[in-house]
Length: 228
Image (cartoon, rainbow, N blue to C red; front, side):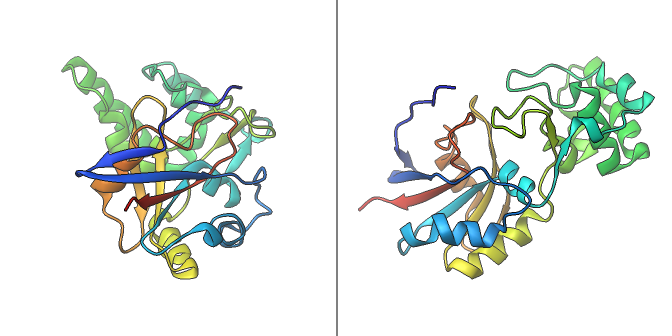
């Protein structure tokens, strides 16, 4: 898969910042996030730098990548997945296997309530009610085939656990602020967890063009550095 082109410099709040994607090996549940950050990113960082971490690689290291062969899809998951609106950046919960993971993460009652509110919202011309009710963990689930990197092409990747706590723990380990990001190539940029010293509005603006890429770049980290 070809890698996207991007300008490493971005202007945010009238200041210029350099984004430096950090390449790693293919990560797995055998890896420890703190050791990987120290091995690949920490040595490159300077005073004032912020480190961003993509949410899916963090989830993978937490053991949250589930092979589709191990997912037992219920009748409810099959039913609800049929009514999920299609989005341009992936199938999301429109796949029965990813919907099943959402049910397991949030519970049957909450998913059914979210589906009901979502259906009412559609009738009223609103979007996003389902995910607002179902919660962050449902929204963060990546369906199988979302990742182009083996061995994760046939896995559903759940959202990372405790992203804010992980960000703070990593920040204390390396001495730099850390943000856990959910980013896509069509302009979606959300900080789902940040350490002390990270401003949500700033880091989302700084990463809005997804300099880490969404393909096979193998760059789960990015250093954000203010230019002199």
